[in-house]
Image 1 (cartoon, rainbow, N blue to C red):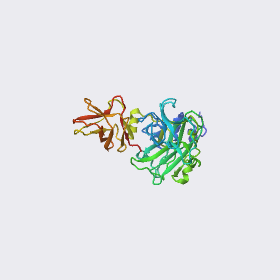
Image 2: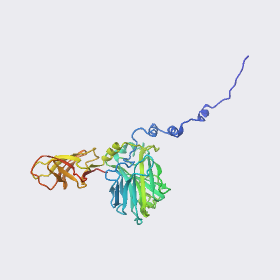
Image 3: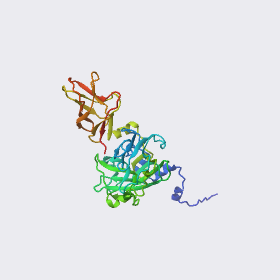
Image 4: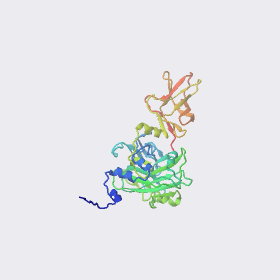
Length: 395
C-alpha cells in the first residue's frame, strides 16, 4: 500500500524573520550595529573615554574655592570655569549624594541671587581636549566619525540648558550647539547626545587644543536669544546668538547650583557604560597637565647643592609624570625650605632661573640667608607648614 503525504509550502525567509530570538536589549543593539567598530564600542572593549577625570575624583588644587572672580582651574582637575569676572560664584568637589557608581561631582554655586547677565556674558564649565586625542575621528575627511557625549546633571532650576563642542583646530573654527532640559530640581538626570561627524573641520596631531566642551549655567541675550541648531556651524558672529539658545540663568536665584559628573565622550553613535579607570591611572592623566609636588612636612621636592659661600641653592626637580609641555613653575603654601637636615632649614623666598623640560626642571632656590659652607641640600617642605611647587602645563 502506498501512502502519499503532502505538506503546505512555506516561505523560509518569513519564518526566519518571525523567530523569537532571546537576544535582550544589548543583543539587539549588537545586531543593529552597522560596523565592527560600533560592536567593539558596545561591548566596552579598549580605551573609550576621551574625557579626563570625568568622574571628578582628582582635585590636586583643592576641593573648594569660594568667591571665584577670574577664569581658570580652581578645584577638580582638568575642569575650568569661566564667567567669574562677571559674577562671583563658588566651585567645589562634592563627595555625597552623587549618582550610583560616582563618588564625586563638580558644583558651581552661589548663595545670593545675582544680577541679570549683560548681553555678551556667559558662565561656562569646560574641559579642553588635546588635539592628538581626537585625530582618530577623521574630521575633515569623508570618513569622519560621530561622537557620543553622556553625563549626569543636577541643578537648582528647571528649564533649558546649552552645551557646545567647539573645534578650535579647524582653519575656520567650528562649533556644534545643543540644548537639553533639566525637568526636576535637585534630581540627577542622565543626558546622552550623539554628535554628528564634521567633514569640514580637522584636528592636528599635536599637543595643542583640539576641542572645547562647554556647559553653560548662564548666558546673556546676545548668546541665548537664538535657536537650537544641533549641527556644526562656523564660529562667526552671525551664529553667536545660537550658542546658548534658551539658557536659563541658574545664578539669578538664591541658593543656586549647577552640578555634573560621569562625563564621557566616545567615538560612535551609542553611549556605553562609563569607563571607570583606577585612581592611579586617572591621576597620571591629570598630571600631564598639572602637578602639585610637596604638601607634607619634610617631603622632598628636589635635590641640589650650594656651590660657593654666599650662594643660593641650585636644585633639580623630577616630575611625577611627563607633562604635555614644559610647565610654568610657581611656589605654593610658602613652606618650601632648603635644608641639609643637620644644621639648618632655610625658607625659600623666591625661585629664579627656571629651565624646565617635560620631565624635570633646574632652578635657583633663594633663601636670603648667606651660608659659608658648600654641600648638598634637599629642597623640601618645612615642618608644620605646607609648601609645594605648582607645575602648570594646562591647555
